[in-house]
Image (cartoon, rainbow, N blue to C red; front, side, top):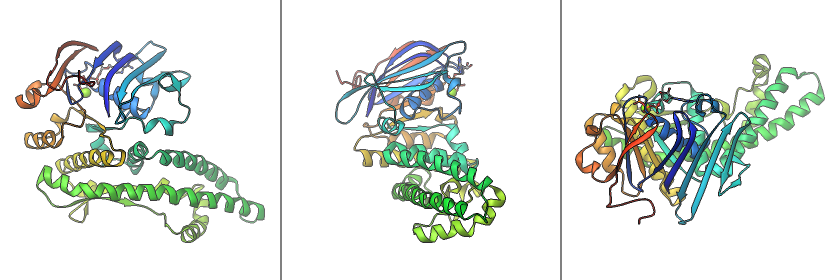
Amino acid sequence: MKIKKIKLQNYRNYDNFEIDLSKNLNIIIGNNAQGKTNLLESIYVLAVTKSFLSINDKNLIKFNNKFAKILGEIINNLSRNNKLDIIFSDKGKVVKVNGKEIKKLSDYISIINVIIFSTDNIRIFKESPNSRRKYFNIQISQINKNYLKYLSEYNILLKQRNEFLKIMNLNNKSDLDYLDILNDKYVDLSIKISKYRKNYVDDINLYLSDMFKYITGMEELYLIYHTSIDEDEEIFKEKLTNNLNKELLYKMTLVGPNRDDFYFKLDDKNLSLYGSQGQIRSAVLALKLSEVKLFTEKTGDSPILLLDDIFSELDIEKRNNLLSTLSGNVQTVITTTDIENITEDIRKKANVYEIDDGNIISIQINNEDGEVNGK
Ligand SMILES: Nc1ncnc2c1ncn2[C@@H]1O[C@H](COP(=O)(O)OP(=O)(O)OP(=O)(O)O)[C@@H](O)[C@H]1O
Ligand SMILES: [Mg+2]
């Protein structure tokens, strides 16, 4: 999967902006606060319809404007050209494929797959479980259309169940009957979601240790999925029933996907609790490289890799290891303030764009691999 062109209108610090990308390596250089991260973010937003940085879509609209628009031309493994666009305004967001509005986000999110590596990702493994669940929800949704569908159904149901726990009366038979109906649905969706999460983690673990060893030369790393859900419907339902008094006390649902967590295990220890900053960084990097492999295997097409300012995060040896792992097939966009961070032989293979205050002020096109259409 490749992006040929990105157009931005009133997006962050961009007015009207257009960039044609190389199908291989693209390097965005510029001083601080010129729009490098914003440009990478726009590619991410085009793919997953929300930012990895801000929770509020309104922040994406350029100050004092009414809407923001991102337009992307992509080609996927079927060599079909697709135009995707997404508009944010105070009415919300609208996504379109070839001019046709797509109402179901689960149909849209699997169209372009992106993997981003930024300082922000590293924080995820230090923060609360909620940010990890959000992260893995997006990753799993990109390669499994149904996952997002089940997850939206689950979130609606969870809200209903929590509302009901606030008002229900244990002595009232019809209340107990209604809870039973909610529980049946709750068990069904929880187990479905849990299976997707478990499979995703199992799949990642097929690659993770090798990638981690490759980057650091260190021992085995595993991603662990921690859950309260039992795959057996009866057992899980019993667990819900056993927890009811506690749930009524706290007035919320205490078992299920809303309580899941993910963590790295290195040398039998939880890396978030015992790992050094550098180890966590390398673990996240190994995760990203594993995701590139997994996405490619699952979809038959390579995802787009976005690397934001990784040179401030990784020492020289790890950078080179990273860049050399990327086969020519993965379209990659890298940002940096200093072109000297990138070795001459890698630069030679890339298109280099210099950005200043939301404009491209110079471009060096690498003619060898050319533009996405391979002219
Ligand atoms: N909604 C917005 N409207 C206008 N400008 C915005 C908006 N959101 C962010 N900006 C501006 O975008 C600029 C930051 O851009 P960005 O984060 O892409 O910089 P950068 O080139 O990645 O810098 P660094 O090298 O420091 O990471 C800031 O000047 C910020 O004020
Ligand atoms: Mg930046």
